[in-house]
Amino acid sequence: MGLMALKRLTRQRKAILEVVQKAHHHPDAAWIYQEVRKVVPKVSLGTVYRTLEALVAEGYLVPITKAGEATRYDANLHPHLHLICEACGAIVDLEVALPDLVTLAQEAHPGVEVRAAEVAFRGLCPTCKAAPRG
Image (cartoon, rainbow, N blue to C red):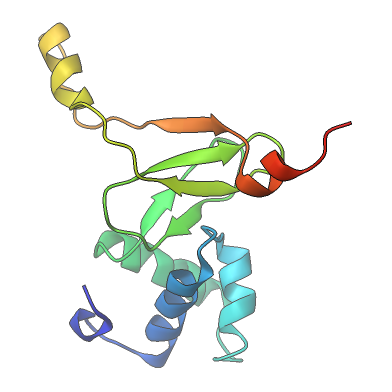
């Protein structure tokens, strides 16, 4: 889905989406705000939050939420999973094939309605894995 498909492609919306797409580290709104200000100096934090919500609602970004932490944003719309580094907190994209967990859970528990499944791996990112441990 290219930028041409975006509705109301304002300079601010385009700048915010491009910042997330180029980040490769699943940034939060505060980081995105600092980066967007380099391109659109008068942008407000509120505008960044509203735009991120709109881009999520329209399917251009995926929010990554973890209790007690700021929401992060992912521009990778291809199906993938995440590894959360236990040392530094980095979120790393993983391409791992999984069985259809929603169907498996629904078949095992027909009395409930299963709508989605969330899977996150925990471990060490490449940087922390390579770091000497002492």
